[in-house]
Image (cartoon, rainbow, N blue to C red; front, side, top):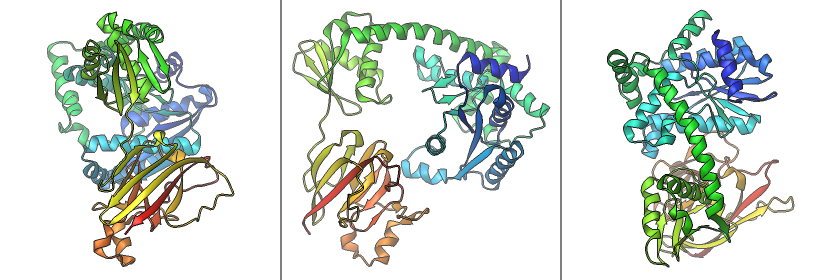
Length: 471
């Protein structure tokens, strides 16, 4: 079968796109993403889709990274595809967050893709995972002790947004296609260094298995993933049926009836996990140990409670388990920071203090109205509520803090702002810093960030008012 036809069949079988979709291709410049872009572009008329491309320069490989970006841009020019790129210092971000460059890179890529999705009104984001990536993922998860869902590996479609059209192609097929079409993709030499766990599996584990146990291990693992997915879909249908039977949303809480705990362990654990994820709205941080904590706890005395991740509290009520949100603490003046989730805010007033500076802070979610005086005063500011995805933190300044001042595109160090304004050193740690999703939104009384400003598309506002108590 011609590879293009193989991909078309895979796209149709998995309902990846529909007519009129605008599809963003994650384009690194390597063989996988170049093959993906070229095949999708050749199928765009048949599928009736529009193609865009996005490239992240991670600034990790100096001149080589710049050449990757140049190649990707030129390829898109030749194919008449709109191209978007962004340079990000991944090493700096990884150090700031205390995470690996691999994880930091992934987070920044997806962040950029989703920014473009919102800006360009895109329908799908195409990622260039292939059969070999799938095999490597399954081995990695098996080594870590995954369950059935983990053995499904990489899904062809996730969240009806991320699609993987060449997950049906092997790395050899991709290299053959790139050679046949004379695409000459860029090669990242770090892919051939065994510095990451995935690279070690790719370069050592799989070749060893192929040579000593199963020369067709890549396809074998992909068949395993398919079979696991078939079984899991059946199990999930039973989980949904049991969830609807045993779980009841009531007055901002979720009640899991005690009869659920009579079910088989395989079903019960999945129902509990679904309950936790549905109630919290968060898919991560819940582990099997938390599930078994609930099962053990349910057998104990009524009235007892346990705290779980994502601000969830479980209460034993005569054998029923009631999930509630932990109420935010009312902080005292001597506390040094405030952390709140944006979804919890309707109207909230808290006390906050830094050194001799004491404040009452009022948070209000309000509808956008043209008559609002947005230049009220330096201690009252309005922000676009819908641009804030998760967490609000109010704290003192930290070394290396930067802000994108209103009207600017680049960042400016807060230290330099304080120096330019001649703010005494002993007063700088008393000036509150407001951050949204770890980005500085407001140096209170001094500067507001451009990233959360109100524009013509703003629908909801977050109003933050600082009332100075004493100084």
